[in-house]
Amino acid sequence: MRTAVTVSALALAALVIGPVAPHASLVAYASSAASHSGGTPLRPLKADPTAAPAAPAPTIPAPTATPKKPSAPDPEKEDDPDDDPLHGVVVDTVPYGPHTHQRMDVWRHMDGLRRPGVFLIHGGWWSSGDKKYMAEITRSYAAQGYAVFNLNYRLSRDAPWPAQRNDVLDAVTTARRHAAAWSFDPNDYVIVGFSAGGHLAASAGTYGDGLPGLRGVVGVSPVISPMLAYVDGADTFDLNRRRLREAAIQLAGGCEPARCSKVWASMEVARYASRGDVPMLTLHSHDEFVPVEHSLLLKERLHRFGVSMTVATEPGSGHSAPLYRLPGVAERIQDWIARKLL
Image (tube, rainbow, N blue to C red; front, top):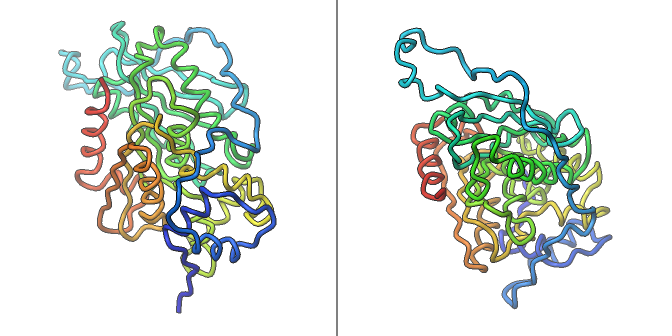
């Protein structure tokens, strides 16, 4: 029979937002949090107490590589290239930092117009995955007329938290700096993340007093709370929940919450919510291993600051890309994005 460690949403919210005792056990943590309810909301912390701020994105030249077409044209449409939604779109892979994983594919339109932007962040337990697996989704947004930025980032085996969040911030900074060269409106973009990438998207969306030009954040099966993943992954036969628990530990540099409480607190998205944040949309499956409670924690916190967040669920157990491919899901996300961009 499955035994699970459960913590109420209120208890966990108090846990991740409130002060953290540096040597408390997780059991004492949950017990103390459960006894806390109501009261004046704590002032949000807007800076990571454990790490230096993200380094400025490096200055890079405008793309000089020979543009390449994102896909071969349909032979049936060669006589009328205007029927091809990707006609005039080229792809450049550019660095936004010195590490081999600090790269992004820039899908840009060659018509000289300033277009709204979509940043895409892949999942993979923070420790694996690659932007190449996002190619079809990237292509779909480029075909809708957006400037699209498909990101790689340093994985947890390359560097511990907050390197991953800093990479997203640096990629956005780089794109805004070269907006003219990439036909991108730097004051009109959204960030979309999948699974662990959803954690990074939401973390970027709640960082500081708000990113300039950011209009919204979308998370598909987002791991909003690594602490909840840690708790859910204990004493369970669910292999995915156990794996996610271990992935969260690796993200924290191999250190568990009782010993590295400040690092774990800094990974919690809800801790950084503030009035300057943008609207969010998140989606989960009813029976997936990243439950909807992740998003409900953040929604409750954002609500305190008057920031809207829509949390949707779909039947089944599809996670990340399989959830995105369910009928109507991609269309719902695309409609939401279209309403948020100018």
